[in-house]
Image 1: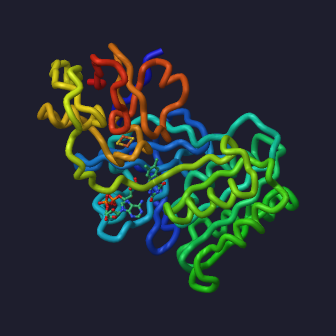
Image 2: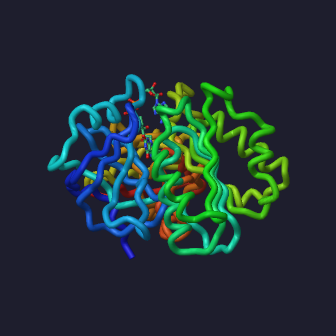
Length: 328
Ligand SMILES: Cc1cc2nc3c(=O)[nH]c(=O)nc-3n(C[C@H](O)[C@H](O)[C@H](O)COP(=O)(O)OP(=O)(O)OC[C@H]3O[C@@H](n4cnc5c(N)ncnc54)[C@H](O)[C@@H]3O)c2cc1C
Ligand code: FES
């Protein structure tokens, strides 16, 4: 079945000030979604992804929670300009950072705004399963903790089943390897969910792997954008890449090591993109001839990949000729 990757108008219903620099935008949007998924918003022509912090199983209305990034274009614009009744453009929910069919405990490590998809997952796991759930939430200081009272309330409602542990950098310094080991504790057969700043997630992932946790039990959601890539394109391979954008075909010579997004840019085109790190699916397109391999895929599920969808910022041709079609 064809997937809808287009943008739709979504009205902001309410805005909740969670902390001095985090706001929840409650949305008037009747879409269905899975806990842990995200939306991509088009704000003033710029694309940014935001996780749904609400749970489809515990909340009546979808909501996303946005933290100001110092100097950041979209997060600050949303805080400063978006209010009830305003309309933004959004994709339908997407992403694969979701609950798996399992009775195993769920253990989450999150930092800062990384609590957003974790909150959704926690609420759904508690509402729809009997799984034990534990969260270590790392924040700068007590004022920066998003959802502090909602998390405390969940712990009160699910004694013995839900544990929230807060780590405050201002009091304890950065999270250490020993702390990760201690929190993972005896739950090595758990599903581990990680979302936060890259160095924090890298530390947690390394410690979990050292402890012997199976890689497929570690689910990671990355918010960050790729650093600018100034690498020149590789040699011409003799093949071609054909890009169909806005219904028009453009063919360029294939270069080794070049992503489909880079090939499209070399053709003088301006296809959609945001993170350029395989995290957000903004750059999605469908391969209709030939084959591409993704370096990183943190956003498309197996069915989408089987149907030929590719993250063009990560896809490289593996056949001499390839055609990739962007949705209109
Ligand atoms: C799948 C996905 C889900 C996301 N979910 C959420 C969410 O629920 N809540 C939320 O607040 N954000 C979330 N993000 C991050 C969000 O998409 C933006 O990257 C973030 O709001 C910054 O955008 P900006 O336009 O304000 O800053 P930009 O103008 O893009 O960047 C300004 C500066 O900040 C740096 N920067 C960019 N992004 C980050 C970041 N995430 N952390 C620290 N520094 C950064 C840049 O390198 C640059 O120097 C998510 C990202 C992805 C890919
Ligand atoms: S631009 Fe985000 S996955 Fe390609």
